[in-house]
Image 1: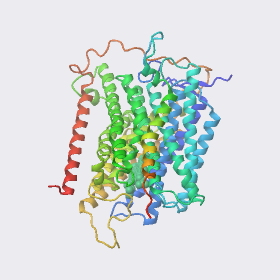
Image 2: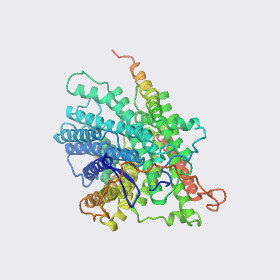
Image 3: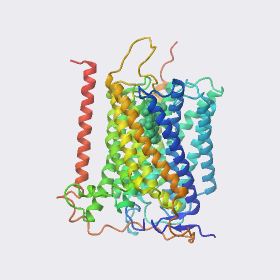
Length: 59
Length: 567
Ligand code: HEM
Ligand SMILES: [Cu+2]
């Protein structure tokens, strides 16, 4: 694997062009981390736990 | 400052000494656990082979617990930590963040795995890897898992820290490489996985030692599966990254579109974990909206991402091969691929097996209505041996054939046998998956010691065909285990007895040359492919997958209708 081999390096981007918004998102690992935790935490865990917590307790 | 980098003369990889040692340690631990887990799998399969019925009931559940924990958690996660370190420090030509802490993480994982193993061996923790409450395991069982998870979590942060160092020290230009980006998605999924694990396993541990009165079983299942399912998605993201890496290593292939591939990894990051809900499709307490949103609307976006990867990886190989002149017909590129090279054949069998067996069965089974047909039958292990044994394990094996000789500077022993290894393991496991899925369709339960229900209050008999399938599963297991054993022997043999390859390691550089982005494509794809398709063979394969998927889906609905006798 040398410097130029495929699949191993980012999109060839000339340095002076403005970086597209999507690429800025993809280049920010901590933003991705935030999204990757929040989305499943909200839709799966919080929603799921709320449904269970709302089951009335039988007597 | 001591020079800490060496360049591998054969592969051109730049290796940082600490990173190299950490990768070695994690990979070796992984292989050792795979050996144990595979042998336990054999005992399980032989017990479920009706006329062999090897173990007694107690032993069976104990061994099954061991098999699940050791393979699914310990083997894959150790290897994934090695992959994370490789994709950060090595691919970015960067020093690894906090090597001492990384060693602590390694020791924590090792100690944790050992503690859980002891708990299982002692016999009081035969609760299966899912350890559903209120079935109690010994406190050590949970404690070991928690320590293991903490170690793995630290490993994830070492990976992120290394990305930060590489960016700050400008060891690369442009964006991180695609393979590293894939590893980043695996890392993010892993952090969600481990956080969910902590939320549920810590209270369960406290319950097992008596500090907490009870843990609600429904709540447990919801949160446990946020860990249990997501950990499978670490595997997917990691093995897909390995596919891309191997396509580049073996063929010099470039992804058809970096943007599309990165976008697909982003879909994983956002949506793949929601599919955890497919494990709760028959649970009361969570509503259909929750089930259907999480398993279809959201999950199909992640499935779409897998389809993209499944298309672009072989597509990029096809383009690379066609450019080398193998441009004839639909499949010359594939026919003349290096099938005798286990790095390639392992990767390609992993890809095909993951798509056709694990993928199709998973998507079909994840439909709420169809799930009723096979829920908790042995169809389920059939499905996930297609994903995790063929998809993940075989991809990792293929990578090891390339990486272990580089790391240990030894030549692979038994190259003749190594050729056969992926075929034995891949085909053996594929057959296992088929027969388990077949038996499951006929109703055979998973995790069940006695298919004949001896002494049960009511009589019940599975069809003769179901028995045959379970026997064939046992035979296929023999083949798969032979392949697995061969892998372990070749790895261990190479590390200890392989011929030293070339010059001794010279750590001569303090700072390696900066990694440059790939040169822009010159000449385009003119002159290859057919008509407007640059990769027509891959296109045909993809259509084939789609047709099989649709047919299988319809068959399952027909089967469902026949069960419900709707007229
Ligand atoms: C070639 C080796 C293997 C053989 C012969 C084998 C065999 C089996 C069989 C027959 C079962 C079903 C048991 C039942 O439900 O009654 C099973 C379950 C399972 N296997 Fe494997 N397997 C192998 C490799 C693997 C690998 C490589 C992985 C993961 C990376 C894996 C993960 C699992 C898991 C998680 C279960 C479910 C355990 C449970 O229900 O708690 N297996 N295996
Ligand atoms: Cu799942």
